[in-house]
Image 1: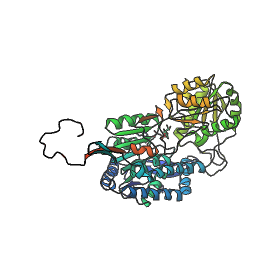
Image 2 (image 1 turned 180 degrees about the vertical axis):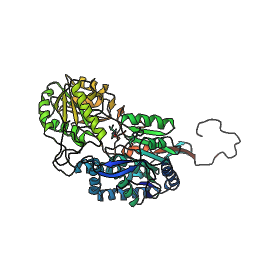
Image 3 (image 1 turned 135 degrees about the vertical axis):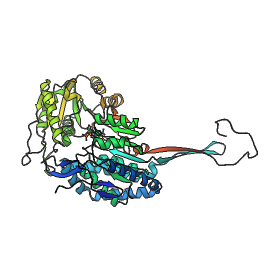
Image 4 (image 1 turned 180 degrees about the horizontal axis):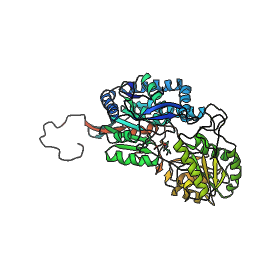
Length: 498
Ligand code: NAD
């Protein structure tokens, strides 16, 4: 019998009573791995109620004890790194190395959660007026929810719940219904690390379950990572319901190639950043902007792209895996066709791709278009497949104007050997993450990570130790520590401190 993915409510794994389920499959061969239930209304209620009850005690657990649980969690994640990588590879089709990288980038965030006492320090100013001091505390806000996408099933849940919990909040996680197996294991290891019951809860589902969370009066804040279409809905619904909301959303990332860049490393970076992980990264490069004479390199790029191939997770020679689902696969193929129909030149066509021994996989080969213009669907839409579009411009100014006119602002990069060009680019570009001779500039979690413009909505404190600001309130206290003037009968009518 196909196993059902469990919910985790009040410290226990439970089988959902829901009659609605979706298949969880390996996209490399369509093997059915499990059925994921769409949690019932009552189950989502129970998860939130359990978080609310646990909050009353968890917020009072000493901060150093909360940190110690995160230290144990970090150690457990490292101990189970290979096992998590294998599970992740089966559920997403990612290559083993890529799958392990997904887990590792999450472990780095847990390390920030283990450092929570320093990250939660308030501020103090002594003697703001005679005998009066002002100081602030950082306090948790209550039950927080996280809604996560399919493409990083370890890293993105780990962006959210460890920090939120370390701050003293409780959490309800609703991971992607497409690959929920790793989130279940992450929760299991969190319990093994000693997390008390009710502090972390896990429900499965899709739009209905998310909408219930968004409208629930006991949810204080919502972190979302996913597409722009869904993110816009979540931002509007959550903020209308009076919640603190942050949404990290879709992208269309450009890499600018200057003629003075190192050709070999630039082209290698372009191939890896565009087709790596089958292009299913919010920081993938999907547009290459060739400035001036660098356009002559497109021919070499074509040869390198044609030499890359997808394959099974345990095939060490495969560069990337399959597309996550049949609908996503059809969408990528549809956009490749539209690119051809709308007049772009398809230099490498991956739409008819096979992998030996895996005839049913959602395979798309590397695909390269030149002569792309900004009115084409392949430029305007997020393809989320191994497809790279080439655009040529005359100057760096033109490249910057092109990128700043694109509605998305998640990531971008410039390859050059000129310090002046790099300085100009990093100063003028309106994008959240900028790489200089680095194709996918995802910062480590002691920096922030947020897209600009249509790649992001809401509170900017979205990632790493900065997220402590999202998951907490600041309470500022002004206290008079001396008793003076006890005989005076005159009330103090001013707002000045005295
Ligand atoms: P998605 O938006 O389809 O799903 C994300 C989550 O929203 C899932 O948990 C899903 O169940 C839920 N959801 C789906 N439809 C919903 C609806 N109508 N109402 C409420 N909830 C709904 O995204 P995806 O396909 O899983 O992930 C890929 C997208 O995520 C891409 O657009 C990618 O750029 C983006 N992404 C962004 C970042 C970032 O940091 N900006 C990181 C990773 C992924």
